[in-house]
Length: 357
Image (cartoon, rainbow, N blue to C red):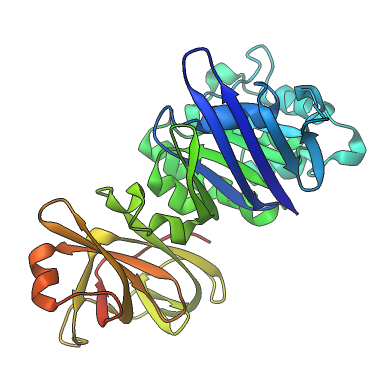
């Protein structure tokens, strides 16, 4: 089960798309890049709204190749745009029912009541779209897309028009879709923190071409790529909640042989947890210091180093279980400690946060 994409398109404005990638047929694959890199164009080509040469196969179904072309209405997708495209003359309930009627009953993946519960919109059913907040409109739009029985969900920067508080409120609902529905998602974003929280895999686009693709943890920490050089560069580490310390209000998450400690989270022991650690919050030492206020100190191998500007150095670290961390240190410190590829150091992470399950 996989998504296979190969598109070649030349537009009148001079933009050229020459993008090829494959992704798992489940989970969230982020299309990431700067404005104008081709993210939305790829989504429109997948939907059949823009006709490009090439191939589009979704979990064994050929939607497009040299001999096949499925028009948009024959591509079973749910499309969520930046601005919720709800029918203004219909209530929330009627908008949902419209989406549900788009597909034969035998192809429905989720019942209306279940979609309402999953997106937390029961109290909104009798309202008109004009009486909804931006976040509420997007949750209704997502529910309607799910009710159209899609085999692929396309999401084009669905949170970009929302303020910070609204984004934080909608994240758990997006994670619920990821965890509860066996549905592949192509998710367009230019926000690295958003991608870190939601995506399993990343396709990095630059000027209409695929610069890199792979699991989110690898692409975000690859020093040859621009993501690792952003001011808010970070690593994503996956683990399992192993214990809670009620006395001090802490939660422990085990990742391989390492145990991360963070402020108390309302997560059951045994629950999967995704952690985000920013490069600016990781310092390095040659020895483990136990007389420190930093709780998260782990042995790691220096996998790669690269200068970042005239005064800083980025260090990619490999943990015991093969997952990666990033550290941003001064070049002066890097030289003083003799930081080089292959050496063993101790990573000291003073900021660790759960960003998903």
